[in-house]
Amino acid sequence: MQISWCISTPVIHFGEESSLKLQAVLIEHAHTKPLIVADPFLISLPVFQQLTAGLEEAGISYEIMTEFSPNPSLDDVQKIIARFQTSHCDSLVAIGGGSAIDAAKGAALSGNNSHDFWQFCFFETDGDVPVCRAEEFIPYYVIPTTAGTGSELSGSSAVISDPMTHRKRVVYHPDLNATAVFDDPLFLVTLPANLTAWTGMDALTHAIEAYCSPMFDPISDGIAMESVRMIANWLRPAVMNGKNIEARFQMLAASSAAAIAFSSKGLGATHSLAHSIGAIYGSQHGLTNAVLLPFILQHNRSAIEAKVTTLARLIDLQTPTFDGFIEWLHQLRSDVGIPDYLKDIGVRDSDAALIVEKALQDAEHKTNPVEMNADGFYKVLAQALPIE
Image (cartoon, rainbow, N blue to C red; front, side, top):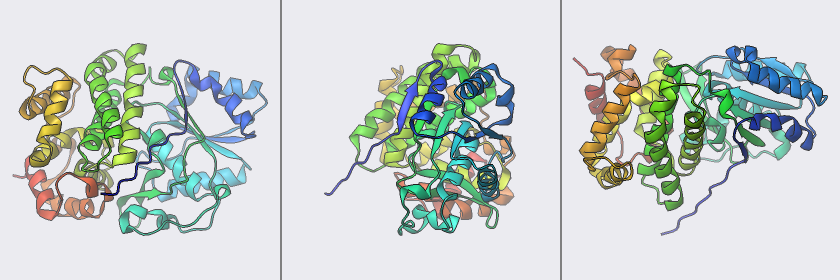
């Protein structure tokens, strides 16, 4: 058996006010005019204004762009590149959730080269990505404002919607990584309870799917397990009180750990269905994952029962079994306001064939513990919708 492990991360500056190190790191890398790609609501927050004031004091000019979609598309990527070029910027700073980060990563991937954007969909073809030199990528930095998407540490990939096919596609290059990440829990304190829950469940899905991936990588398994333990302890407190800095701190760390794990081990069928449904309905990704997760775990039971039982023991359930873990997961979802079924978030059973078609085209299910085909996806949908 030949196994290669490649676990790497950019430099992570972690903790309260770690974001204020951005100016020094920009100067260290001789970047003097970043384009800041930020969620629109952030720019009025004191923590954001403190950050930009520090840039100004350091003599760093900047542009701000807030126009992009919740599910970023190639159009969004191209708009960022155009703004970057016309403003003569030299780097990107993504501040926000997965939408802002993936949109900026997409621009970083293609803004300095002439390759067709979709040539970077390595996971769809198992072929080679275009050969690029380091200077053919735009340098980028990340300040995440959610504890869940993991996009800041999800290696070299970004999820971008294809407006021609109405699919979410994963673009990738092994040399595309943030120059630095700034995990500052102060950027999370104003995140609403529902988004805290949805992104937190996204992180949990990342951790569980990575842990259950059939790839042999015990280092990432350990990272994923610790992420599950932290989320089990801290998601509810973070949802209940957004100003609970300890809960925000712990959830941010758990999200980062989950992202490192899935970057190495892959994800699973939960994400393929969530990408498909998100492309069709525009549903929030973490919420869609949260609804789907227990149904996918049940579908995968024959291959993952021992692993899930280990997770049940890890989080000290009174019934430390596969069934006990599923019961705990349902209770956690209820406690943080996640609905029971896909129909509760607007998914229609009349679209089942289209959902399955797009899920099969998505690369994430290639590391699902049970090989997925159309019949398998239909079976999951029959439970998760449910189809009437």
